[in-house]
Image (cartoon, rainbow, N blue to C red):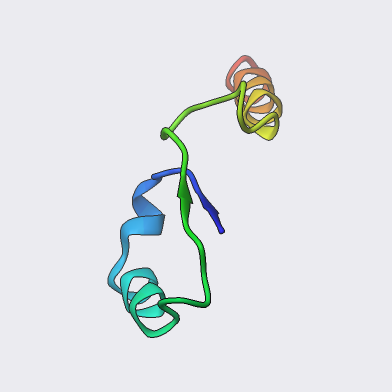
Amino acid sequence: MIWYGASIHRSEAIKDLLRTKSGWIHLVRLPVYSPELNPVELLWSQLKRSLKTK
């Protein structure tokens, strides 16, 4: 599972899931904002910017 550190990913539900699936899920943490590692970040950034200007 690739986890980019957003606050939603630090909820108790997610922590419980990771505890119960220990050994089944390999967690890879990315920085909160890392467009070079997660290309969709650039898309979301552009979309948000275009919505703000309208």
